[in-house]
Image (cartoon, rainbow, N blue to C red; front, side, top):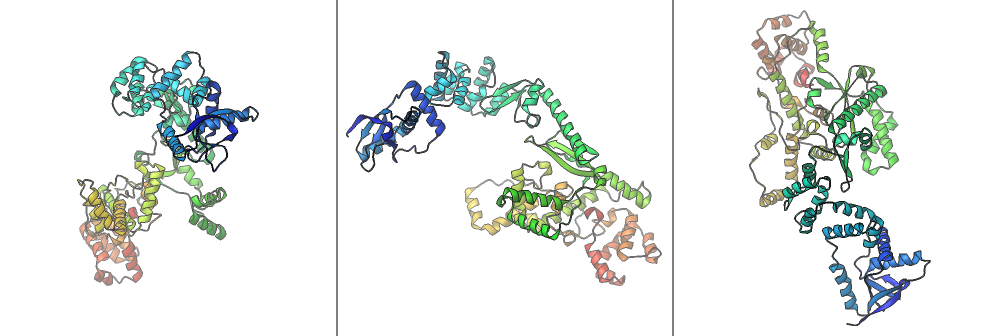
Length: 593
């Protein structure tokens, strides 16, 4: 092979296509230039005298070439003579390009840490070290932080008994004895950096904690809170949880007062959890803004924008979509703001969340009962009957969702993206199964697809072969199974989120459930049966049939109503019109409406 080292002016050098490192990083070039300016050019460049081009094409040493050319520009543009090992042989140039770049091996982090520390001990500043090693100052600072670890820890890093991430985690504690104690526990083991930090500072709070994000580190510091900066995670660990809690509660209460003042709500409740729990809403009922009918032109524009979707709109289009949607959504009434409750909490991300709005079920029910009978009445039905109605309602919702796989997938994807809490999620993503079979299941039809999900073999193990067999059944079969499984995970409509789902899908409870003596009529108060009978038959107060029915025993009343709902000859005997029969066929207890 023929090659020689020549002194070549920097303006006669170019990056040859053979060179694997074609990308340019200005910051990297600047760092290399400062290194060469400080230490000189330690290693020659390698070039190819390609007869198809003028000058010498650099096949190895592209970073150095760019740095030297940058230095030449800084010095008024005069070229700098550069030692280049040059070959005219195509294959030799190819070999050089591959060999140097593949054989270059960076310093082991432990060696690099010790080298930086040694230079710092000799008086080298961070900028000087950065220039000498052609790296950025931030990188030097982080390596010098690691140099403060005990030598035992650096030895473990050098011997690859701990990872670089583990070594970084050890720097959160300045006590060498604590570091060595934890090092002994993690040596040779695969333990996450976060777990190591917890072992070293068990009482510290990471700055990613929602309370810390919400309060802000500046506020925490200003109030005298102690913390340890985490140079590697670009965060900190806070050491005064009591202070953090106080600041968190204070700011949350201030936000509640702000919302009260700005929006006019009388009752704004701070929630310390990261979601509104069922215990907060158990005795409440969700209320919504009163919708507004947009002018025809605006309504058409909103429909068009919704079809395009946020992702396909410009910033102006997105703003217009949000404006129209907000207008159509309407607003709460003065009465809502007077009697409603708003909950304010902070999500896992540290973001303030406002959940509007709820009213008291107890208050609403008490008012209704007082109007009906002067108050003091027994419940309409026992709890197990109410639970059955909820189960049937859930069954109807899940049955309706069986035919909407796309909607289920949209819900699932949104739920994953938004990180919505388990308590308020439309889908139990663990594919749990809410109750749909009532205790009294007469006259109740459960779709076989939901039953099939219930009977799934929960002890089955994953098998690639079985998965392949499943895939061969096709996407239609897959979608049907997916729809059934996700539908079966829909939560009970008693939860606010599932009541919201009822706005997205039509359900037909009477298609799969009919009230009869066993599942409903024999379980509610007898006087309520009188009202149902009179209402369905449209009886006047002085109608004899009304008085006759009232004299019957509870079981007889229940049987009469069951026949009215399920026996066409009984309906005919009462001379019911088509409209009356239609009302019976659509009738539901008010708890289901």
